[in-house]
Length: 570
Image 1 (cartoon, rainbow, N blue to C red):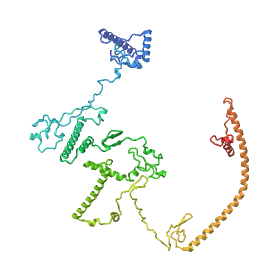
Image 2: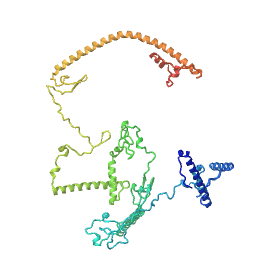
Image 3: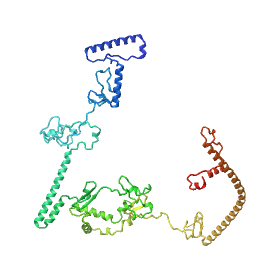
Image 4: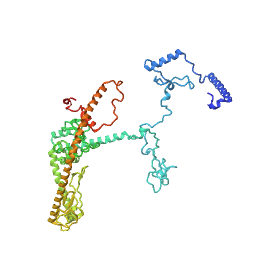
């Protein structure tokens, strides 16, 4: 089309602008007719549809929306959703009226999409080993002679005389690295650049080691058979056992329950339904702490209930760990694993007696070895007098004994520290006293037990002081009794007046109960009436109730939850 600029509304009032707009319109029509005559693009306005065509078009759209008619297809052969508005799917007439409705402009455009590297692309490792130069080339690194970097970027050790001057020891060139463009997932891929052949090499290496072990064992058996040390029947058992050497349950990866017919062991590594979770043992929030991350509950969950830890099924991880033969069992299991790694054929479940005897002999040998080593060191270097010294805790008042505490400060393992004595002087007797200050207490006051004196730093009066204090207290008690008698006399005078007040209160309460009965009946009558016929503000009272009215309301109030309400007629 022609270049038509938008003119401000304020300037349209003038006749000159109107004349210019008419000229522009004529030029635009002339260009339009010339373009149509050439046959390049037709920008004619679409002809107005007849009423019948418009009705048919609307009916077709409705049928497409209901699913009775096939959906409209774009130039790529894809269906257009009939619920998409026309201003989105159809091409404007002033751009190209010959184009069919399409949704291509709503899809990602190939030319605008960013191209990312493929999943198999990665930086080349190492150097080019196929072609290594034998003499220095111009523009190469002065230190090592490689063409792919300069001297300041060289990662080799700086030579005393560089390859530029010696011409020998030219390093191979590195690979020309590609520029990788990774998407969001590619940048965060942990296995990016991993070569799967690397894992295959590890598998092959383990297979070779396993094959070497089998050949060695077979050769050993053949030698034993040839020498006559091993029977034929025993060799058959060995051959059957060679197929599976995994004894321990940790080596079995299959989930659920596995049974090995050769070893006669059953492995269960799934929790059975009857197992009670630790956090369900005691639902009290103040009971033992359960750590959900490690699934550990170290304290006894039944500690607040008063149950004996020996009687309950579960008393915390620490109880299980430090009670009974648990520690010795764990030590024996650890010894079995270590012996199996060293080549001894022992197993805790298969050969418990053999393992126990082996473990005992090992402990005896270990103690003997330690004793021999200690004696040899003492003979060589001396120093027996230093070992006979008193213990360190007596010399330095320090100890390295291990003590483990709970979250509440209770000692779980080890001995509790001894309470340190006070830094002040204790049991110091002054002023002829035979007891210290604070040994006697009476009526909220501290004193000396030897003389019952309540004055600190006073001189001891002995038994005479005790007699004086006792007479003083007796006089005090007599005065208190007199005061009590006077109060009782006053109360008798006041009781007569109180009885008159109580009679008046009873009369007021009786009147209030009668008024409450009338009020309840009146409310029942009003509640039976229709809301439209009920008088205005009939259930509302402005004045505040008195104490007698409140008491009457409480006495007359019906309580549906009272079990005796049916017997009282309420």
